[in-house]
Length: 422
Image (cartoon, rainbow, N blue to C red):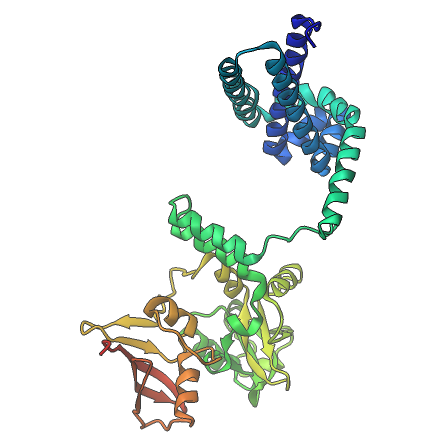
């Protein structure tokens, strides 16, 4: 080794250092490149685009190349320092200095430059980087096989697919981003809604049958027009005899336009051709992401939700699905529907139709029952259906529930009081 010319050593180290800069520049550029920049590269140079695409679609091989070049330069430099410098302290000092130079000028700065100028660097350095991956392919293959063999001896299957990122992982990152101030509360909520979008079913977001506003198909056109004028809805399910026999959907504009003609005023709306449109029926268990695509492709604005017995459970409008992502949508005619109101004494007046999830979020109460609304929860605790004149109360887990109003055997208003711990 003493006979080795220092010029050749310096030259070898310099070449490997330049290669390190190139691979880290390119690595950062490829990781930062977006679809629009890829399209621009494709327009300028088809061959370069194909190579970039191969590297992006086979990142493992490229990452191995980066690691191999880094190991080579570290190894060769270490050997050179060890053999060319006699004093131990000087060796240590030179090694530390070299590590700093390599980190700052060989890795950190190239990575930052690569992320800022991804398109230009991808165009200029693709050929040389691609050539390096090809040249080092035998080394990469051998090292990979040796690593696989060691893993197998250790009882680990190297071909076992890596664990995918779970929905909980994504939500955790989103919440952490909100806590750190990276995401606004509204942004974090919307992203959470998108992540959970595919988990919800039609029954989770539908307007329940007890809250549906429908039109009797036997109603005369003149009466129907007068009836819907006082409502804010734009579409109405049409039924014959009862809401379990829905025959279609009628549009507010269609009824008003037909009424202005003054030709069919005394006809039943179900007898007027083309007025009642065909209804779309979906099961309660239909996933809302699938339902959204169906309604979008078939231009459906409202769907009737039916249970396993074919009876009407409720309705889902396109607006209901969109609100699961962006939150409550109010137009100039809507009045904000507040489910929970806090009184001056600290108690809460809550609508019976309020979802337990909303109460848990706002009042920090945990419910042990598999119910959807506070009405269902209390009915399960009372173990009976209440009469309209009943006003019972119950204390559960240091929370007092007092029924304030019952309509049609459903709890419509309840007073919730959080009791102090004794």
